[in-house]
Length: 101
Image (cartoon, rainbow, N blue to C red):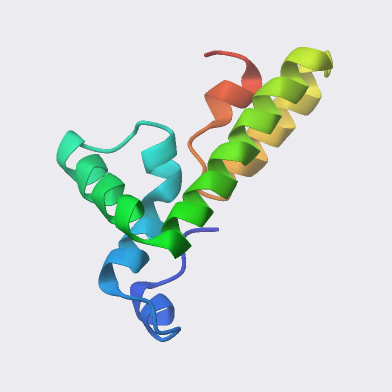
């Protein structure tokens, strides 16, 4: 599943900058953006409470996954299935889920 279309998000009354954050947040959190793109999102997040909350939530989600991975020795097959599912949802964090980083 990919990110919602820009027109769908703008139809919700979001600003163009908020739409960019929603569409690229996983890439931003996974350090998979260009420095210029990351700086643009970082600047918007710093000044937008709604996007700052979303970034905090998504970041906490990734931190929790990493913590659970270290606390529970999940079978390799389960970690791979979870990583594949996240990748299919547009999350580039599958390497973290598999324990590669």
